[in-house]
Length: 124
Image (cartoon, rainbow, N blue to C red; front, side, top):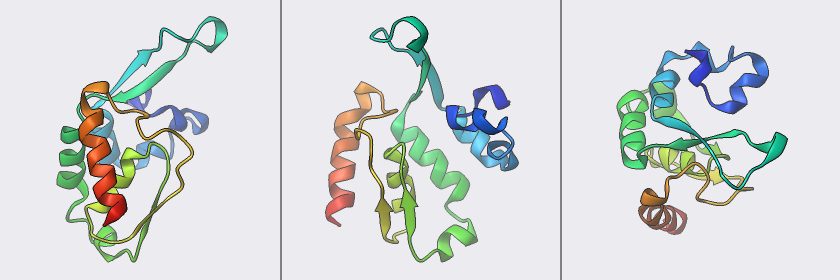
């Protein structure tokens, strides 16, 4: 369902994002919300991970045994920063280009644990 893809995918009609059905399983844990602070033409939907731990567990279930992921020497991550945690599962260095707040796409209920996970990952 290309309509449920992350907003970045819309720029290429979802073609790249829809090539791996495993990614669509992750997208099931995103929810689109409109932020009340946005008004006028800038009032757009933002994607939130509905349950950060469930998202991590599903990523591990789907990609944890992926041979190409296991053979990587290092990983790069960006936005959302939470994806750095997903890649840290493989025990390889994760290089992050972080240009957004750590909390982007993370529900308020999950943030305290996410901040602790990030701290542990960054100091490992």
